[in-house]
Image 1 (cartoon, rainbow, N blue to C red):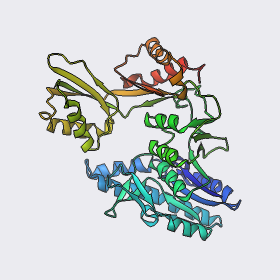
Image 2 (cartoon, helix red, strand yellow):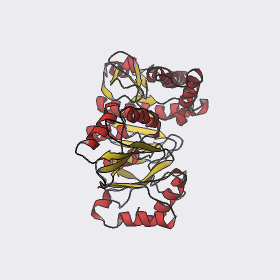
Image 3 (cartoon, rainbow, N blue to C red):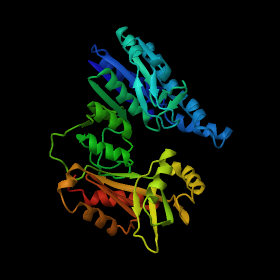
Image 4 (cartoon, rainbow, N blue to C red):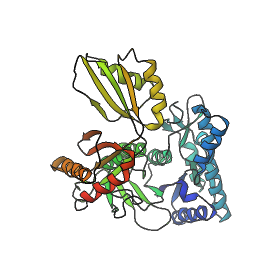
Length: 402
């Protein structure tokens, strides 16, 4: 059996935890299984490297940031290989260049294109435990790239898909997928299983359990994921195409504080203006989420939308440079907002879900700025200071429906 395991940064934060993970790895290796392990940078290493870089240059290039950030994962896999060797077992660490993990050329947010599995297979034939750096790849210029925060999940799923692994286990500091962040909602419930679609929505909407692109890959290639804790032996949550249980009305509540609201005011009410606005942003790789357009009055209209907060400065510059092209009178910004969402495959066939959500927010005296819906999710934009209160209020409103 071939097993791919991924361990997050908190799981390998210090010597004690490194050896704890080493023992978890050996549990499967001792049974005769082939084991590939993907690791994130230890503890707060990534944040420390970001701070170190900004001490030198407050606005470092994305290429150089990728160059420094990827050293964190290289440190993790090398230390884990040393730990396993010290315990008397064969192990080898490999970085993205040694594996040949090919990505697009977008620094800091690259996408995996393909993985050359020849080196990994060679090391497995030699009965090595193979330790691979997560979060990183190489582009067509042979430059190091990173896949975005949380990208180690995507690395693990991609390797599992390429190797046709029997299992892909994602180990983190929580013991599965919950109906809400258990650090925010005390009575959050752990799910035994969840569909790819529901997990993808939750991950995209701020749930930090899995990287959203890892779920996309798992769904595309049919990789069954198991999310479990690296610190306990508790059973985790299985992420798969279909769940055996009847679809729950709501599977979870998620919050995302990496959000900013942008409003283009006084755009000419003519065909093609919305296309012009969003095509400019798309050319600069700015992801747009919730969109709201006002009814045209006096031959003008307003278009509001959200972007990731860490992309706000780039968005400001792009829109100001193209103000006349998009024919807006002015652009307004608000970075004091957050997005709170509910997700559930059962929502499509059950009326009244939105009413419960809005009533919960009303009872908590929380104002809604924007609303977005799909077949299996409802998102609202609110003041950031109300985020935790909103998540708790909504979770309480649906407590009998999880």
